[in-house]
Image (cartoon, rainbow, N blue to C red; front, top):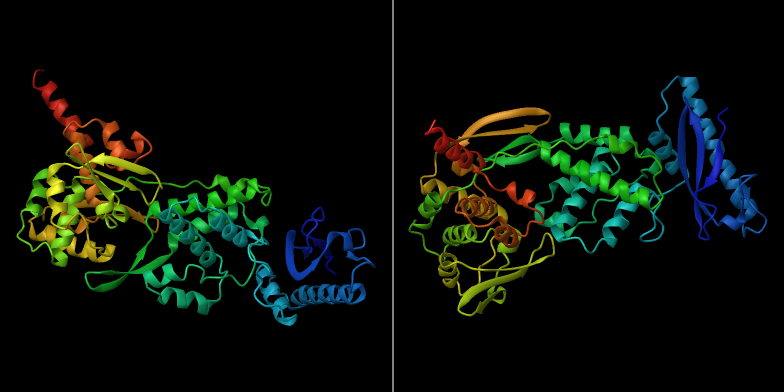
Amino acid sequence: MVNINLHPRDLTKKTAQRIWAIFYVEGNRIKIDTNQFVYPNNWSKERQKALVNHPEQKKFNAFLKEQIEYIENFVEGLKIKKKRFYKDELQKEFNYHFKIGPVRPKEEGAVVDFISFIDRFLANRKDLAEGTHQTLRGTRKNILFAFNLVPDKMKNDWEKMNVLQRKLNADFLQPDRLMEFEEINYNWMQEFSSYLLKKSYKVKLRGKWEDKFYSKNYVAKAIKNAKQFANAAVEAGYIQTLSYRGVKASWEEADTVYLSWEEINKIKSLNIDPYTPEGKVRNLFVFNCYLGLRYSDLSKLNNDKFMNVGGQLFIQLRMKKTDDIIKFPIVKSAEDIIKVYDYNFPEISDPTYNEHLKKIAKRAGITNMETKRETRGGEKEIYTIPKYDMISSHTARRSFATNFEADGVPVNELVAITGHTTEKAFRRYVKRRAESQFKGFLAVGANR
């Protein structure tokens, strides 16, 4: 017969503690949530029962005994049938038998497992920029899906939502079982990584829906975020082992493009009505080639962000991603563009922006072929596509960094404009490093 012990979570606390049924199966420590709570001063650790000062001692202890007997019968039944034991299956049947609903915290913000800890972590980190918050919530979603913590119907309903609906329903995904802190170890992190590597999603390419795997860098970012959650839980005293840190996030340099001043001028010289959607996208893109802003900041520009100081136009804004304030002068070519709209750019959704941008770049003759390499699903993919197909809203930021750095603008000035915290981070955007080095190499080599 299996030996089952009852343990409240923490008997040193003054608040009611959740009671766990703990036992071993095939050498593995199993914890089943009884969904019962007890105040530590009403509990006997030695006898594993409620004391006489408990308001419903007899009834409470009888119910716990019934729960223990159910677990014993369940485990013994599997042995007789020679069936494999699965903790999740027992917890599910246990909840159904004792009419226990979704195993979630009774009080808002209460921590009973790793997911509820993540929820509290996100709720308390109001200092994080919105973009960072969304990325972390994306990792939470992936954890829920990777370990089957949400009902299939809820998962299917979520996958049917569009981007806006998901943003408006950020708390839609709620687990129906616990993820214990003891589960967060090397094997857990490895399993999460494997799930992301094998997971495919639907994406619409050239009018057709196709299955696509997550990129290597997307997986690395998710692993980094999961470790951030786990590290916070360690600091809070919920996780004891650090073995999960042994799973390393593996990154690769992304193959991206920038546009030279010549290519930018080709786009700039196209005859497009500036008030049509296509004209607005073209002007917004060219304008940003002189500013190097993230699209999240660029799309929110209005005349409140501009000021004239001694005859020079400046822009000042608080960046959405980092929450830092930047202030820098606007060159005349950029000012000529923003004047057309009275220093207010209309909002354009990111997908629409990129769709128009590729068409504009193609129309401008930016059709040379580029080789792109990326790792998806653990497999390296190398293919050749037209350059206009690789252009996106972020290309303007890379073009700004690359072109102005090549023109000799000091890096410290450029970093002050882009908002990067280090020169190393800024250098990731500079796409002409090899070209600049080769020019120096050839100049020296000509005299040898």
